[in-house]
Image (tube, rainbow, N blue to C red; front, side):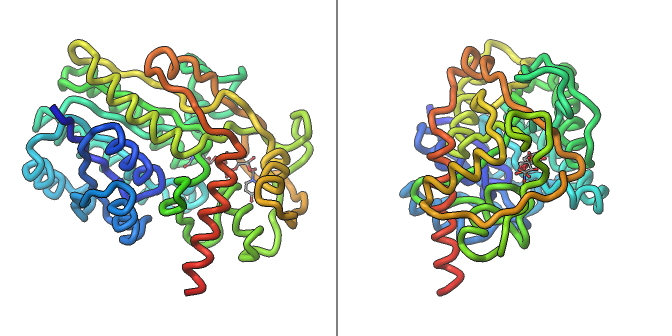
Length: 344
Ligand code: WQD
């Protein structure tokens, strides 16, 4: 029997890629999105990529009446993925209440509605930010979580705790908490990708915009860290690999006997790359020379973090397949698509 998954935030960056992978794996999927950080044209692209019409419910995932109406209309739901969170770290410091309301209310409403309609399987977008500045590398799921440095990070930790309590409390739920490392890249078709609003905060969109001439120069935030080349180290994961981890999580949850399971799982490549390596690899795959300078460190940056991804391998049968080169090539191709659109 085909399983139907509610993709909350399915028009966004990771949600849209996951929607494509769900359909490719034989799942049926339904999207909820309020387009607060996504564009309507993503839906047309999803139709193009999958060859199927999209069942879309436009509205606020934190509105219990709206979410009830979606579950009533889609009576065959078997699971849900929660992507509908605000994610800009700096903005969350300036507007904490908006972040807490959106990220936590939407989670509470989804959990309650799933419990009311007896929909068992949940995958949640958590983040490696829950590890703070880790005492050990690579980080495993047993590495202690630390106090978050931002309201954004706090919402991830709080949502993890809420889900764990809801599962333990006998709400007939099963959950996987996917702790993403640094998602980058775009679909190889260049039909969907990340749509940063304004000046990007994240490294890769800043790199591609600089190479495209939209930004004059990239600033590398610090080259005096205690790392092999002095720049920060992260675990960059291709968004298509990350999307597949959601599909594998749903497969896993379906096979779990009984309810009450709640597993936190790292989603990374298991490799750390420095900012300088990202810049150099980008220059190679794009065949361009990037204009950059070294600036002061950015407040709150962790010097180095990368995943031990063993748990994903043995529990989900998932591991990353795409390389940093693949991700940067796809990000560059996507930037080309965006720049062409802007000129039209
Ligand atoms: C990567 C590296 C920067 C921009 C954040 C969130 C995290 C997760 C992913 C999101 C760092 C350096 C960056 C620039 C630079 N959540 N950099 N110049 O901070 O690791 O993680 O995004 O949804 O929770 O915190 O990612 O891409 O911002 O930075 O040198 O212009 O690139 O210092 O070392 P980060 P990032």
